[in-house]
Amino acid sequence: MKNDTHPDYHLIKVVMTDGTEFTTYSTYGKVGDELHLEIDPTTHPAWTGGDQRLTDRGGRLSRFKKKFEGLF
Image (cartoon, rainbow, N blue to C red; front, side):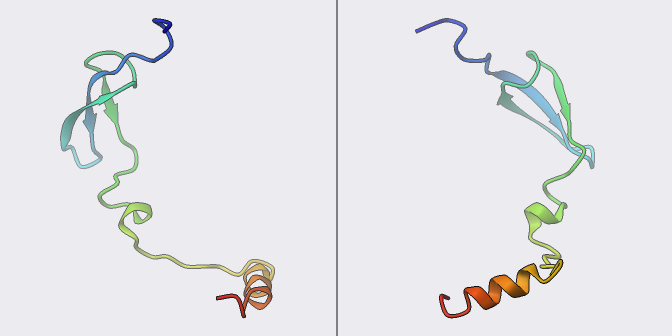
């Protein structure tokens, strides 16, 4: 196996948007670097499941539903 095949896996500090921090192993940066998050997974709707809406742009959703209405 080649020595340079895999990236270095080391400890970094992750700083959340609310100021909380934790340490974890990552391939990001160098040993001891800090990763500052711009989007917090504890409050962002993508991870919390909030405000999920399907928008019908140009009838695409309607056409999809009509095409597959008997399948589901």
